[in-house]
Image 1 (cartoon, helix red, strand yellow):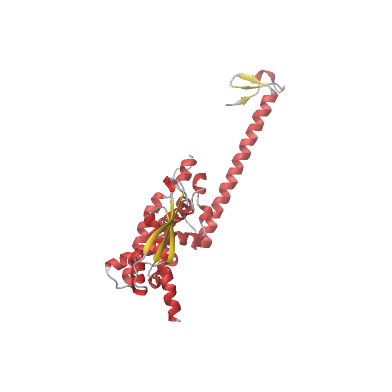
Image 2 (cartoon, rainbow, N blue to C red):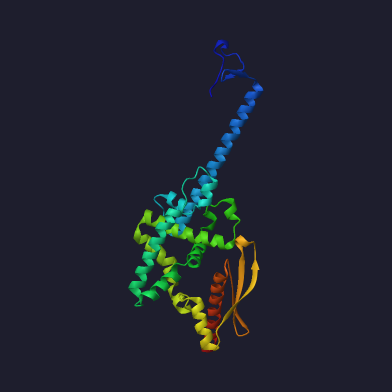
Length: 287
């Protein structure tokens, strides 16, 4: 809507016409202040975007070891669906990149295991699952330190710790997808090798590739001659988001506790802690 002087008055100061209606100098001042505020808000937003992009580029250079040709791929990799739902000007989230990164991660892990270990298919499948499970890649994400750069809705920012861990793991796969598209397979493979495949020795040493419940039962029967049992110690939260705490007992001795959104999940975590306790006992006996 154009603002123009009345042509019949020359340079004389007169009310300004807007949409054929005259308005006073006071109205004009209000319009001017509004425009000024709008420009200031726009510039403030621009500076925030500029700072955010600078942080993304610095993260890529310092933590990933290279500069993205298309930094928007990394931005998308760290953009959760909830952020897109809340910010209508943002149209792309990381789920497609996550899909691609998951496939690259599985291929690189499978290739690594095939070339370095002469195990049967079932064992290699279990080893690969241990390498790429949510907890493992989520921890890799925490080590990289990209959590402050992840774009989430306000609701997701206030979500549970477990929800955040899943989001970090999903972002890690999406980052792999972004690296693959921007830098190629070899750079993506090196990234996975550095942050995921290096954990293989620990996985083999701890036996964490094995089913925790089967493994802890084997250890309990071998060491104590008793089959472990699971007891629910606590239930918290509303029905739609309940948290269970489960203990694993060998005889009267508590060997570990686990927390999860289902009893099955909590039992698995408790079994994993039980395995760690037996391994610690074995190391003490070997000294």
